[in-house]
Image (cartoon, rainbow, N blue to C red; front, side, top):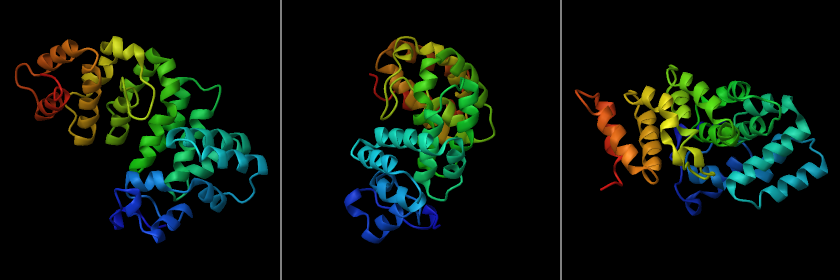
Length: 258
């Protein structure tokens, strides 16, 4: 498996060389850019990875590939969970192709009977994956469940804000952004962003730019609905002698406010 880091990937689907697209869709290389993530032929990749899927499962996957990318991933996760069970999560999680590990994220998202703690524990290794795409799929896959049990989710994710891994700290912020990316908004946090202060306050001076950008984007989301709250929070954070990280977060958080 060729790691994405050894080549420069294309940023537009039309610029992806045919040989790279073929290798991506056969699971031979990892995607290097978002454009490559989206361009993978998942029906072809599925057949390359799993040779014994039933005809109804393959038909459902082919139909899923006509959907938008997030709905596609979610539907494939459901089909694979029905077809392979929990053992399929382990197989997908250990595969070299990032898209296959992304399917594992959505299989975790499709599991029933998990509480917040159990779902976060199940998705944790994927949330800490070395590949940027898998980390994005991880929070997207479980976000609907976290939003449904918001208070519990905030409590559990606040504990992730002190993890050594910047990937897990970023997950804590990114998973509950009020508006998010490619996903449904969280109305409760649009109305009352202060509910998430146990997460945000803990990350206000995080040393990682990767985490800082997520916190700033969280607050930028909130500013679209509660601008005065965001202004007030940033003013509070910037009192006395704030860390450079805090100044950077606040500058980016306020970028669309006049």
